[in-house]
Image 1 (cartoon, one colour):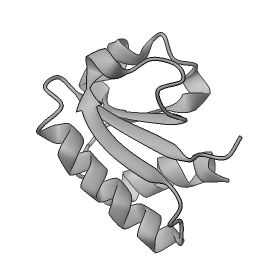
Image 2 (cartoon, helix red, strand yellow):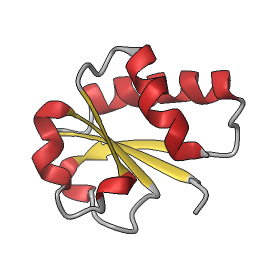
Image 3 (cartoon, helix red, strand yellow):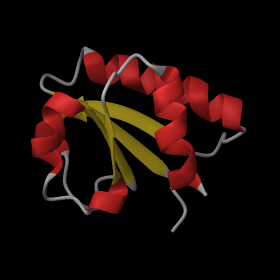
Image 4 (cartoon, one colour):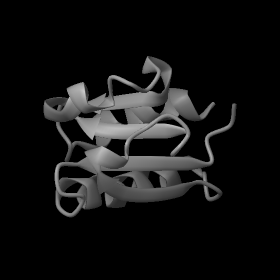
Length: 93
C-alpha cells in the first residue's frame, strides 16, 4: 500500500509533533516524495485508518499499540533527521 498520509503525534499535538512534521517534510523533499500529506496531532487521534503511517517519539510508543507495527515509526531522537530518513524511507517504498 502506498503511503499517502503520515500522522505525527505527541501528548498535546502542538510541540514535538509539529517539529517532527517539519522534519518529515524536509526528508520527503530530499527523497523526492511530494504527494504525501503530513499532519500533526495528539496521541488520542492515533487509530488505524486515520493515516497510512504514524510517527511518534520513543516515549509515546505505548500510545500506538492499537496500530499495526508496520504502520508505525518510533523515533529514539525526534530531532535526528538521519534517523528519521533511515526509518521512513523503507516505509515509503
